Amino acid sequence: MSSSLPSTLTSAEIQAHADYFSVVQADLVGFLDTAGALTREMERQRDELVSAVSNDDRVARTIVFVNDSIVSRQHWMTKLGEYVSRVEACTRRGAQFAHEMRRLEERLGEMTAELRSARKRYQDEALLDPIPVADWAERQVRDDVDAAHHAVKELEARVQSVVAEIRSVAAAWYSEISFQLILDIPDPPARKDKEADHSGFGEIDISTRNGEHIPPWRTDSNGFPSIDVTDVNQGAVGDCYFVAAIASIVLTRGGVQFIQRMIVDNGDGTFTVTFPGHEPIRLDGDVYANASGVPLYGRLGKDSTDYWFLLLEKAYAQMAGSWSAIAGGWSGDVFAELGLSVSSWEPGGSRESLEQMLRLSESGSAAVTAAVDLSLIFSGIPAGSNHALSVVNFEPGGGGTVVLRNPWGSNGNLKVLEKYSGSISVESGGYVRITLDVFEETFHGATAGVLP
Image 1 (cartoon, rainbow, N blue to C red):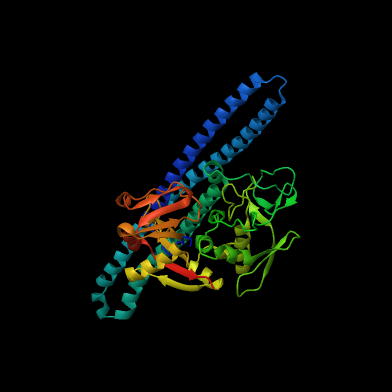
Image 2: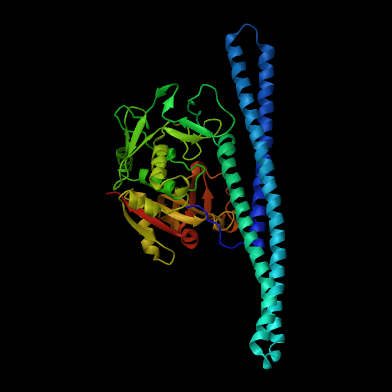
């Protein structure tokens, strides 16, 4: 599920957003410095090779490769510098809006107090002509209050617009930059055009590589598909609930075959995806990608060409009507649409029922997801950052430990709140370990889906 904007924002909440993105800005600057250092090192290696080259074709080819890598790295440094400037601007704008909001909050408070005072002051005057006198006095003050209230509402709309822009910048940065500098992703698939277009976003055919069609998943010598949970990764759309649900299904007994039955490669560059209970959806392999050919929404797994999840996500968005239509939701709804039997645990429910549900993931009997506000367990995260994760395992020993997988496929720079430093740990591959006590204390709920 994705975060939703509150209907009313206070100056403190706006300032919190500004403070948070100042941290993002600092991280971006750090990434930029790292990229610069890497580029300088690559230039040094190139210069050494140039000085050593004679008639050795292998060295010459290596020089060409290093030169290409330097050009690519410099491109990302340029893009990263642009995002640093944009996030810095958003931080400044957030502080400005917070200051303006505080001023209007104070003004509205003063006018409200003035209105109460006016009512009392004219109460005695009401003996002669109570209704006209009191109404006239109140109306004069109320007009000012209404004007101030209207101004605050307009400002709230502007603030929400800025917050949305900040989030958009962060999402675009995460897709355009961090996947290249932080994660070790495989080479992007071949673009439709021969020359890479670095002018902006576009589409790529994920089902084609080097001019040849490749299947949605590989198969081993026995014909068993290579469908794996590492293929299921969230990109720049807020569909963590969908990603977590699909990942948890893959982890169940029979989950791989369930996914395999949903997707048919038609052999003509198109695919048919069927969600149980819905009309089959026919689609091609085109997906939105950034300038370097990296998919913007669902992402390929590390060291993998299997793109079956990207087809599922595209079909889900097509079934909903648009990509924006799937930004925000519940894993339980996804389970239901796939024909799974759904049950849930909510805060206040018995610990026994929670343990029983978590054990379903341990045995592979059911797909299980869990939801939490990330700000409750990680530092530097804005309140209301609701997120869904897949439950991978439950270890009953020592009071119980829940093993979760972040649909991002990594944990980025998430840092556990100090008070939970001994109860929560983050691991590579997006895995999170949390004690059952803290899980029960902080998580919004858990949902299980049993395959038919």
